[in-house]
Image (cartoon, rainbow, N blue to C red; front, side, top):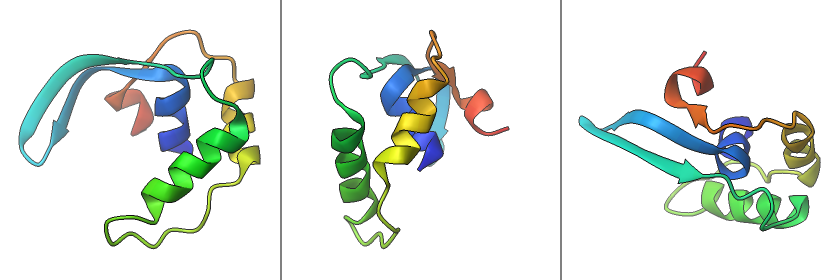
Length: 81
């Protein structure tokens, strides 16, 4: 959930490889559009749809990432350290 929270809050930029395809775009962060509970609900839904069975994401996990106060989008390399 931490990686997903970071992407939703702060965005993602640069190349990302998914199933052999490389995508290179900018996804802006959405931190100003939703509160922590709303983000947690969205991530919980995604993590429990399409055959996924991950546990719910607590709003506190979103709040912790928001508190980091990052100003720029993440890169895939940063998220996978």
